[in-house]
Length: 337
Image: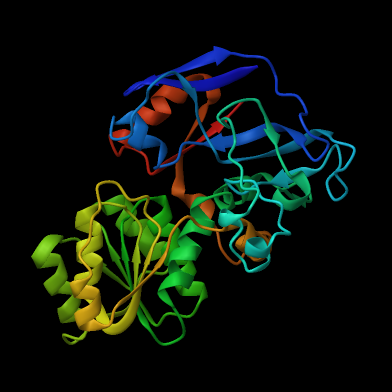
């Protein structure tokens, strides 16, 4: 089968490798109908994260089950499935508490920008849905990571009815956090974005205000919008020190920063949190916990997170997909076989 490999920073290529096979009787094999490039994949592409050897890459997909192990009971061959970006048994104590991303049997995919993948703990990981209509495909794919991650940012920040919420970061996750804030009832939703197409999409998703400035100017703009009080919920969706510092500075005392950006080089002092009673909550999103509800919202037409995919390319052009996202010519790229 064809599979995407990153061989060095800036170097993406398609290779032919054997199709995956069942290793455990709790596994399933899925034919990937749609996958995509994640913003977190760009850390390796940009050389921020080391690439010690050629690695198969990708962790977001939807597709059709082609094989199941003898112990798989809830998923069958022919099912169309949505998968979170990690595998979990969905039965351990952490899963039952709603933190499948900390499952005691947590697993990661070998690489999903490919034609097939093996899914461990298929019963606890995959969710079968009816064959989607063409217009639903992209939004179901968004459920596998960016929508669930944006949702986790909003839940972690305590977004709720009547609150003013601010999203730091205008990538696919940040834009999906805007969706989450709207569904969860925020009265005012501020998207911090410097890019006009992303600003427009944020408004489509429910943003009431846009702040294009960053640093002290951006902080002051948020304070001006909130009568000097700060936001009642802040969603950090980038992962850099600058984004985290900005999130803390705009948070109202006594509220919470929900952070889901993968941290890179972030070392934060505790004093700002302590002095202003600001909470910090979040981390790797337990997408499996949110998937049933998010899929329901998508299939009902309540939300359309698939709008974050503003470019679709064939798998063979995956290198162009990475380049487009790296150069910010695309928000998120969907890949088709």
